[in-house]
Length: 350
Image (cartoon, rainbow, N blue to C red):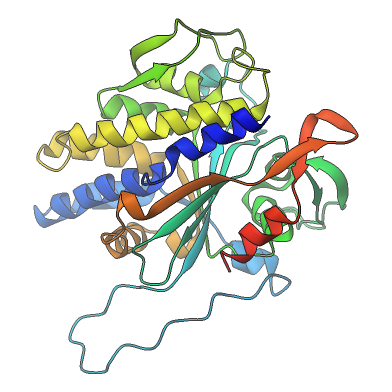
């Protein structure tokens, strides 16, 4: 167990995947816009789906992060936001749509779970960040969540963390994370199977080195230990692999995801996204078509401003960790938060 947890810290000091990806793709949007590509901007903006989480959850939430001081009235241009932020980032295993169904290895359905969950905390000034991975196998108390069709779900005890998304979508995922952490989520970003695979392909694939053989029938991935250049579908399979490595737990999978994050960052740094308009558009289109956000990030302008506000965030100032967990005493195949360490971690992000 400890060895697998230690793997999570291999990503320390690296820029989180969504920040680097969004930064590169959204910077490209600016270049395209400068060239007068109005249709392109409309297309990318239209791709984004958003959910009004604030209205759905109301006031029964942790307090908002106190705002920064108002800018001077003499400032000519509207300043970029610089306050602290907490963003819930989910990788969805949605089977909605033919492509997602095929990549998910099953039939097309309307159901989905949060296959990957990260709380991204950006410090005041936006020059440092902490990314906390939450294992999907964590047992939690899932709070009552509002349903889109009306009414609410029942409170569930010892529920799998990723079941929150399955029963109540983004709204319940956010409420469950806030209940677990007592930290207000200022924003929500979700990327699905197809979008992730297309993004990797848009980057020309990704090179990853594995320390052990991988043979996972569920993710359909078979790799010998060593260095491999993966296409989008293979990279997605690597991110989802759990049964073909170690003890088959979610902690081992998170370790692979950290390796993939670092490899993606290297690949992004080596691409010509900012100098090739065709590659820029392909990457930006893949990202925006796969995104679901809260309404606060529901437009291209909002996402661009977020990306611009993070330009001072270096990889060396980004810490990547996993929520401290221990095996559940009543189910050794599941984990629970390791207290008081977990509470102390979340407290540091408020």
